[in-house]
Length: 125
Image (cartoon, rainbow, N blue to C red; front, top):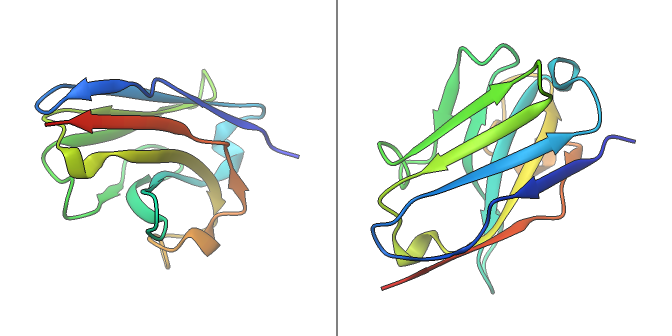
């Protein structure tokens, strides 16, 4: 059973920055594609960004392009999300996901078999 533990969530003002981290209990290279999803109260879970196994390819939701950067360090078994110029609409629970075998369906939560418990991000205006 793969364990994913997120950290770094906080309450910030609009325009601020945060860096989320996800620590995996296993070799992240074996987890193939990894990503970040978020979910606001009353809304469906949505993709934020996904990164390939070796970290070369990444894909972002249109709403975060140019503001967020996903990265991974397979030597440290970790996934990161650097978030800048945060907006109130970025608020929500952020989840680390892992295990998608290809980029097909990259935006669908069902493509990822492994999930963390989430870390809360709150952005106030």
